[in-house]
Length: 310
Image (cartoon, rainbow, N blue to C red):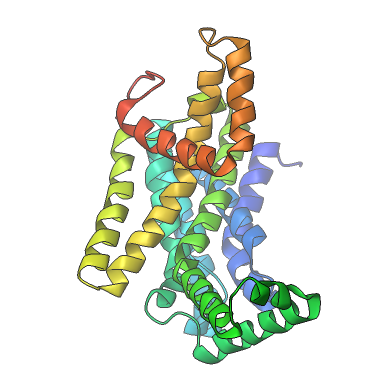
């Protein structure tokens, strides 16, 4: 007796939830691919068997390696796939797509950033920083770039100070970079699953939008940064910077959606469209900032006049 495609898919999704966390640790190959496969299994199994059964299998899948290998397993794996449970809950409750995605993506970003939050207070070890700077100076020297920079009036000490500031800033935003990677993984799986089930009409990219209240995350990022800078609270300052980096990436995508929507408007002459596109490449940095701001303010002003969903 052969299994039907749906039964086979349920079976393999359930096996994935039970075995992949432990298998990833045992093989030492846990990474983005493992997270996306488990996320996919959460969505597929959850849509067919329900949230409760999915939670049971996910809990067992994570509990077994925790019992066998101890608490150190969380140095190798992340909890990012658990955010898929909120996506399943949203689908069961028939939330609008943008609402389901926003709240589950918020959980994804938090779970993705948690393992790297120590960088907000500690940053890189001083020895690691010195090694990185020495390595960079040696590369500059070998390539002749060090001599060119010194001819411009900068001493080696100033170069080292500049590199230290860059490394410090990079260490500060590592949580937000981890959150962005997790968001990219989740967004891809979320999109694939929606196309897979075909229970709703696909939303064209030019109509992508988040709920209006999503703008408060960006506002909080600015407020945290300003308060942290005003009162010299490094943790609050770092939290604000990371929030702004995450929202910058999100609103960049939304801004591109608005940008392409505007370019498709029949009211704009083709010559003007070509000029706008050309100017976007010539003044790339200005255009990038403008697109990010377009995406942020579209959450409030709804430039495309899309119907609001709650």
